[in-house]
Each structure stands twice: as C-alpha cells, then as structure tokens.
Amino acid sequence: MSQRSERERARLEAVERWHSMQLEEAQATHSELSKVASSKQEALDELAQMLDSAQVRAREQLQRGTLCLDELMRHSEFVAHQSVEIVNAQAEVESAEKAAEEAQGIVRERFQRVSVLEKLLERKAAEDLRLALQAEQKRLDDDALLRIPAQASELEKEE
Image 1 (tube, rainbow, N blue to C red):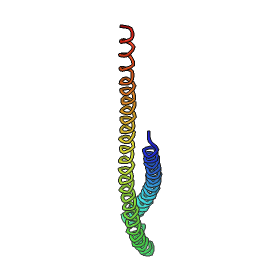
Image 2: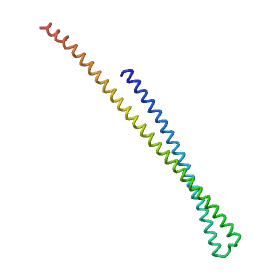
Image 3: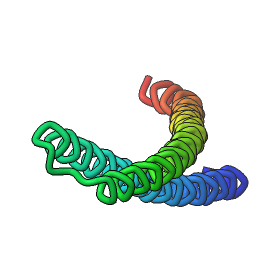
Image 4: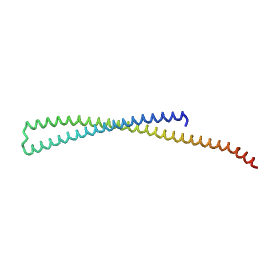
C-alpha cells in the first residue's frame, strides 16, 4: 500500500471517527430531549388527572348538596387556574416533542453520514486490496518471465 493511499485511509478513518462522535452526541441529545418530553407529558397527565378528580368531587358534593357557595367559588377559581396550567403544560409538551423530533432528524442525518463514510472506507479497503493483489501478481509474472529464459538456457546446456 502506498504512502498516499495510507494517508487517505487514515484521513477517512479520522473523518469517520469524528462523524461517529457527532452521531453519538446527537443520540445522547435526542435521548435527553425525549426524556424531557416524556416527563413533561407525565406532568401534564397528572395535572389533568388532578383536575378531573377535583371535578368529580365537586359534582358529588353538588349532588349531595354539601357544596356551599364559597367552596363552589374556590372550585371555580381552581378549575380556571388549572385550565391555564394545563394549556401551558400542553405548550411545553409540544415544544419538547418538537425539539425531540428535530434531534431525531439530526440523528438520522448524522447516521447517514457515518454510513456513507463506512461504505467509502470499505470500498477504499477493497480497492487497496485489489491493487496490492494486482501488484503481487505483476511481481509473480515478472519473476516467472525472468525464470523462463534461465530455465531455457539450462535446458539448452543439458542438450
């Protein structure tokens, strides 16, 4: 293998390692953003569940006639406040999911780059092997051509 070919291979391997590290970084970022989105969704679900439970209790108290006007007003304020909190939480979940999707796109893009570089390295290795085998075959052919006249002259001497 020539020095030039060796340097090209080394450069390609360095570029492939660099892109692999970028891919790993993107995967870690995507994982973290996915966890954030998941935790925000869980918080939203808990908030919605809490609001639903409060609504059920208020209905039960209304049906039994044990809910006074003051409690009804506090419940109404609570529901209004929780509704705003839910809308805000939904916006946070959507934002986190969008960030996770964008990170997934970056992962796909970087994975494709690494795949291309790996295929290029494989082709380069196959080409280097082909050239090395071709050079070896040429050397063997040259050796054989040198031996043919030597063997012919030995045969002539024997005759």
